[in-house]
Length: 145
Image 1 (cartoon, rainbow, N blue to C red):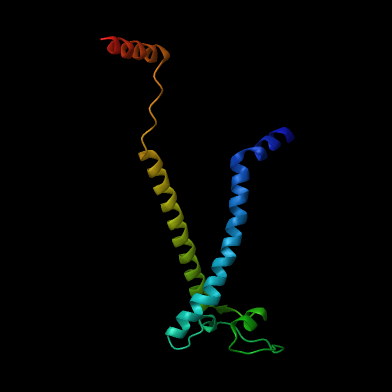
Image 2 (image 1 turned 90 degrees about the vertical axis):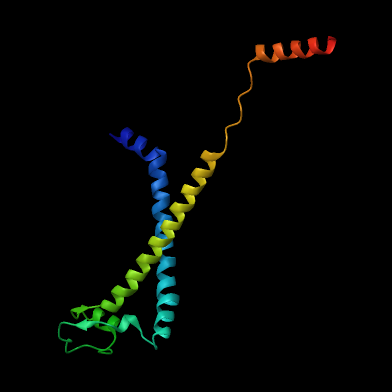
């Protein structure tokens, strides 16, 4: 069983998948930062200073020992208050759309590369030695006339 597991792990697909997961996690952090730090504040500025993270619907009561702002989503969430965070959902939905669009562009570029490689004509195969020899003989005969 151990040998089967080693053979499975050493296959190229498993290693490629592991690399893809690691790169995907790093890419996810970049996209989250892009969304949270650049795009959503820009959208908020365009629409008059809206902060999407502060849009939520509180469903439960605030605990008596709550310390923080009753209008701060992060503070209320930390305190365990039941809420529907539709502003946070909007941020994550934009995040998903960015990742999906980038993946679309990546797949599209790979497909174009595959089409370009397919479109290139294959180099003609070298003629067999006997054909080369016959051509040389024919060339010599033509010279002698």
